[in-house]
Length: 553
Image: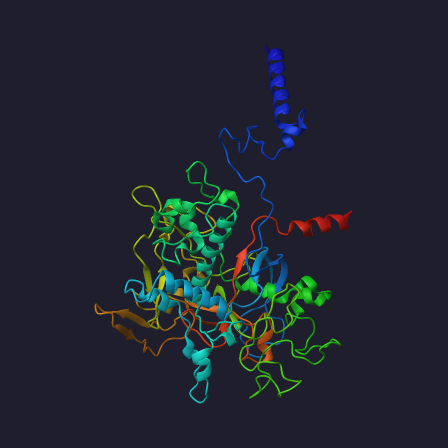
């Protein structure tokens, strides 16, 4: 029996070898044959459907590819400000995509135009959507300076179309990125035949009542465009049966977002083109090679390499050949890009990044894709077992300065914090809000309990002012300033990092390692932003990988 059973096992094994391809290599080499079961993938008869033709992520509109790697994050130059808020640490960054320029007035105006047409501000229901997205043009005003021309013209006049948008706070910048994600994915679905090309303009023209949301499409596609998506199906539609793309289709792109501080600093340094060992050790002072802000090459020798304040009362130099070409902001692409192909990573405007500010970088807990600011959420599920779509409701938030912004628009999925079901007995996270992890939470200090005597006050290591703002039944704003004399810091979980020098800054701030902070609801005339997107799949692009293999041979 033993010998017989062995023979049976061997014969079965031989059969399996044949299925997996040792005796039938053509079968195993087919990308549409499962290596797990031997079944057909994408069979006409049905079964498992998967995009077996996917090559690699397409470069998103307006961005360039940033190949990830290791670098020394932090400042190693002289710390004349004595902040000591970015001591050097070794970090590794995954590959990602980043806008080649800052978001311009023209790009932001497209966003405003969309909101104005889809959510008309004259409709009381939508009034605060458009108003909440408007940049603060009053940031140009100065008590003892004449800047009314910029106040009235900078955002909308075509003369400033390719200038970086300013007056945008951190909250508005993140909402622009969310809007951009949905518009780009709409375009991708139309290109691949899941939507008609006319569908892109259906909401703008008032032909449908709802709009497109990427997450809503993935989780409940029938809810998109106010439930009218069937009439907007493209050439993928089969026999009047709607066909929807899934995440496994490989058509939809990851979300646009603000870059993390680590990503921004890595991209600004652009060590990919350096040949000096000291630069790998964090010694590179600017996004370009060298220790000076003027061009040392024969062509253009002496020209400034960035738009910044050169001295007291000197925002551009003497008129003529020595001028840097700008007094306020400059049009994007006015100066040479760095070795990644990114423009204005020093000068022009400073830029918001995603991180919550802390005066330390805790490299002991993470030296891979470091980021402080994680708030983990999940999709709210209704009693019917489906995700909750905000069909008619709009979720607003009143910022500390009284400004009202729309956090969720109609047609989007309602999100809620993760709870005990997701955190119980986990070792990698234990709660939804991790902004204060190891710096501002009870585990941060031996003397944490001393920071507050108020039982109702969430004890904070950073005892920042707590201004309050609310609206009464008539809509009137009621502001209550924190008049305490015992506040010791401006740092809290709503304070965000911004990077890079601006047209208002001296050359000291052009160092990519420099970091500053501002409350996320505030805006200035010298802070803008650019978007990033994570790369899915391989670290390097396919063509780069093939080149390396050829060199190795």
